[in-house]
Image (cartoon, rainbow, N blue to C red):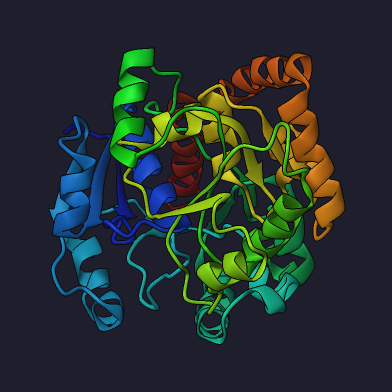
Length: 372
């Protein structure tokens, strides 16, 4: 392997029930696999390794039954045995004993900024982990300038440590050939032309306001089926009940979690992608939809104006009326929809695996130099 920098990435969050952090970790490994100048090892579970496939430059170290106690007691010894130069935790959890320089990714500070939008369990985990990570890490990576500002607002001790590296879009998110798209949509029982939401099923995503907005749209004319894809997050939002209470049972279809194999066709088959979130550190689904050629309406709060980069219709959060008007504009104005598609494809092209790989290599090299 020569004198290449040895980087160990904790990818145990990559598993079949992917959350945003797990998807970030998976895309990070895909990025680093393009960077032959690093010697990268990934700590990953058996199912996560199967999802990732056979990387070229990333060595997969299969972890079984490696929970919190393992991270505290055995991870430091493993890092020492691997002679690691840098350890990177995408889940902002760092060991107390650190035989090498450490990097942590903090995606957002929702438990501090919007405690009403997160669970008590996650808030407790966040407060037990993030202050230590900020103290222990040589660098904090975050995913938007918005999140950097929030981190520094709530954790001023992080000053000088926080660097922004945007998330990439996985190459699978692209415009598909018509036959391929129809095949995937057929499996899901859908025809093209629906409106779409993709994300976790929880209140932070603004789904109550989406349903209210959908009920405000005229029953006749340009109102297609609304398709909602995602798994419940555990915050007790019962979407079936919310749909029934509004009398939208025939106008809304809940798909549950959709496999990554079908997601590009799902995005591409939509006439509009709607992401009415109340707070995001990044907002990857917006860019995935753009990469698939779908016009986007989202909220003009938190990171979304930065990430969408002028290529989406932005509406006020928590306003069903404004959201309904934004949706109606895309559905009824073909010229606007075509312009958003064009601008979205250009914007999405800026978020590549190669760009993240270059930035992360530079960051790892700087951290390792400072530790010598």
